[in-house]
Amino acid sequence: MFNSLSEKLESAFKNLKGEARINDLNIANTVKDIRKALIDADVNYKIAKEFTDKVKEKATGEKVINAISPGQLMIKIVQDELTELMGGSEAQFNITGNPAIILIAGLQGSGKTTFTGKLANYLKTQKGKSPMVVACDIYRPAAIDQLTVLAEQIGVTVYSERENKDAVSIAQNAIKEAKATNKNVVIIDTAGRLAIDEVMMTEVANVKAAVNPQEILFVVDSMTGQDAVNTAKSFNDRLDFTGVVLTKLDGDTRGGAALSIKYTVNKPIKFVSSGEKMDTLDVFYPERMAQRILGMGDITSLVEKAQAQYNEEEAKKLEKKIRKNQFDFQDFLDQLQQIKKMGNLKDLMGMIPGVGKAIKDVDINDDAFKGIEAIIKSMTPTERANPDLLNPSRKARIAKGCGKDLAEVNAFMKQFEQMKQMMKMMNNMPMGGRFPGMRR
Image (cartoon, rainbow, N blue to C red; front, top):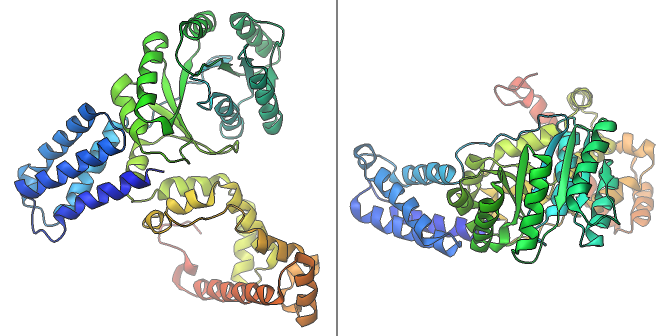
């Protein structure tokens, strides 16, 4: 995500490397490179120029000229301006109303239906809501089938009328059904086209007028760059939507849509989505995205993802076992499962400052843990709980059971033992190996 833009911005800041202070010349060179990086990322020239003019104005202030570390200061200025360009702060998401009504709009192929499922899952699991999804794409039976499958996956109700060709009446009937069955959020998935046309626009506008939604979310494929921004403007002129959703951020995203859309339509980005899994939906935080674009990572989001899988009672039990040096293979397997639930492994590692750049060309498969899982699952419950039982004959049986070489099994056992020793050393450190400020 944004790898090319990140690299080009980093290259731009090299103009200031080794400089004792900022001056007109190195500011001009840096700003020129930043503007070029933004244009290459498919940001509109007018927006790129206005952005860099603001950066230049701040950089030439009296306090900046006397700065000790001009490179770091320029990065901070660019970070602040990127944050402001993308909206400044987290946008509010309105789910008041009984039921709250959310209308989803966008072109065909933008990821509307998948996002509808992801949003329902988010509201159910993160907000404690009881959502209903509504299939209002009356032209594509496959869209109804897709939404039905997604709803079954996440355990939410789907409303559809396959023989009804009136999207407005389907939406109205769905709301009546939601009220009768105590569903407190209704998410309406509307029809899209490969390009903007009057029929589609009229239909979605009619649905909006009929149901009066609290939120109208425009879903856009972030890989389409400036085209996505132009499409957003057309939709906004007709619908006056409340927010934007950027999908497919795990693809080859240059950044143009994320950086330009708020400026162009003056509507906030509310969610970002990547992949097909139903739990890969995130609230959009402009400051965090700016940090990631500048290669600073996103520790806050990483911690939040970990906390979403955190069970306080289980964590206390695990802590006791680690303190007593009783951490076993079953504990290790359980922790692997928790990590996998947090999302795409490469994206997670990219949230750690400095790691994203290091692994940008590394292919990290989400199945990276499968070999380890196979080894542990080939053990008996007794062996998992008692690593010391694993003698050569048991290891040979385990290797045969998981289809691995004995050398691979032995290597994993050695790594596991080293990890246990590391845990023991941390346990003996002051504060029990905890970082300052963490609760005991």
